Length: 152
Image (cartoon, rainbow, N blue to C red):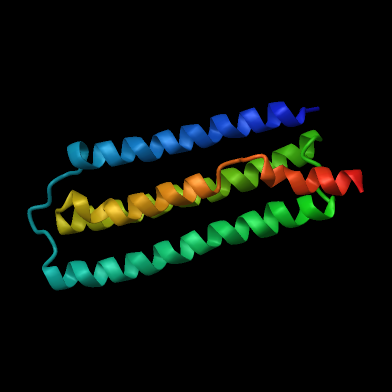
């Protein structure tokens, strides 16, 4: 049986680990990105940027859908109790899935940077992924509705 405080600290550790992966990706992008001999032409890079941007946008919207449908809806209704082992595991799985989706957005930027031969091309994707991770951090308000529902 997990306590709410223990659960939140575990979630913060997982969140911080994924945020650290994002930071490492940003650092490694400049230093480790392999150089392509045949970088994309400007028009090719623009088309790829558009396609990857759309995919990143879809992934970003999906993070909110995951948070709402797999976590918040059931917490608000009281159908999910994060104080139980199974309830906490479900919340943790959903949050790790949406945080991982944020990292996928950064990886899409890596694809663009690699193909275009320009590490800075990944910057909007990395920034977007970081903003989403910050927005989806496991703050107390995430669990406030479940506490209210349990008290009602």
